[in-house]
Image 1 (cartoon, rainbow, N blue to C red):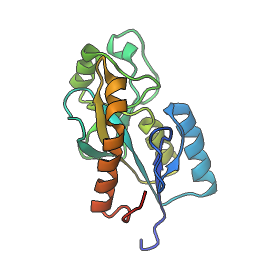
Image 2 (spheres, one colour; image 1 turned 30 degrees about the horizontal axis):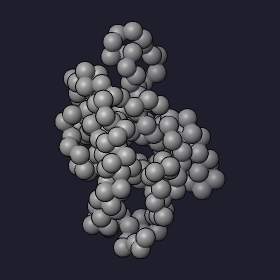
Image 3 (cartoon, one colour; image 1 turned 90 degrees about the vertical axis):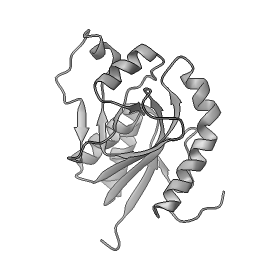
Length: 185
């Protein structure tokens, strides 16, 4: 489609870009605000950009693209809870990197290893709700993430230390892939 309307979205806070629409942090705010966007100005495609924490397989500043997200909480890994809803959504049939979403950031090497055993490689707080809303509105979606930290004890400190450089790498990647044009500032 030549005049395809692509919406580039991000969470906000420290992940504000002058070419992206911030939709909020966490599963709830991002779902509400993205639903509002889709109802009133439905795009032909969604590209969610931002940071992700690695459970150990992916390296700091590595860039990944995916359309597969999960919403698996730590209690599920410990067999202390269950859910009646689908907790993995993939809008692509090929094996992709799986991004887990929760309103909480993992800070445990042991828990990170448990996610890896489920073939879940990284986490981003919003991506599951983004994919769920995209699926509901029948909109193709892709997430493009840069790894800022490992989901270990110092996850937040690493994120703060690396977010500026990570955003620069993400912008260069988007320019190289011709998703955005050269930007100033």
